Length: 236
Figure 1 (cartoon, rainbow, N blue to C red):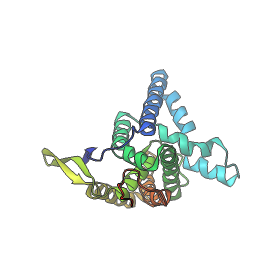
Figure 2: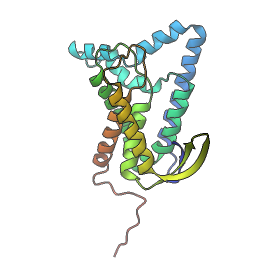
Figure 3: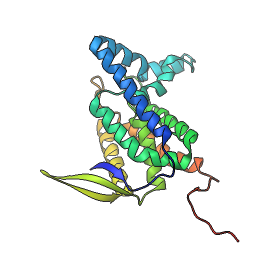
Figure 4: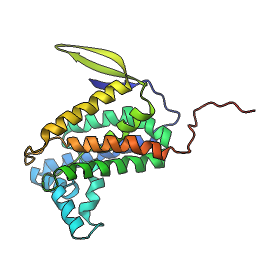
């Protein structure tokens, strides 16, 4: 199932969501420029600003919480490994992130998004702390938005492309089915990846799992005592 859009309107222009999407495209354009120079130049850039779990763990052990290695927990969220990686992430961010921004407010959403990405990266580091393969992408932060969306809008209708063998169909599916199916796939693939060699890279499934769970838990805490401004009430 590939979600294409949702039927959940927003009250405000999702400025932060749009800014995050633009930032990811700008950084990716810079990556393409480096690649045009040489693949080695691009690899050095990714090694420097992507999350390298072994380097992050080493920085903690050295008692240096303000090091560049720690900063990569944020900077890595704006790097991507290719067009498919970028476009897939940005599609999910646009479909689901705008509604979370609408409910949390712009500043809260920005902190929620970046914080979700950090927690997601830490979840993956906890699974494979010794790897030197850099981890890049907004998937973990976006997974946090998916978790929050499932909590806040479980019955929202998602227009989804469903493949049936050689055929496909567009159907409207409740968010709880789309996102629940996505999360179960991450769990299955994540458990299957435990113990597998990571020297050649791959998908950081536990970043997706960690981000999703963190987002689902955090969104309720952020909305405690905060009335939905779109909710109608009667006064006497």
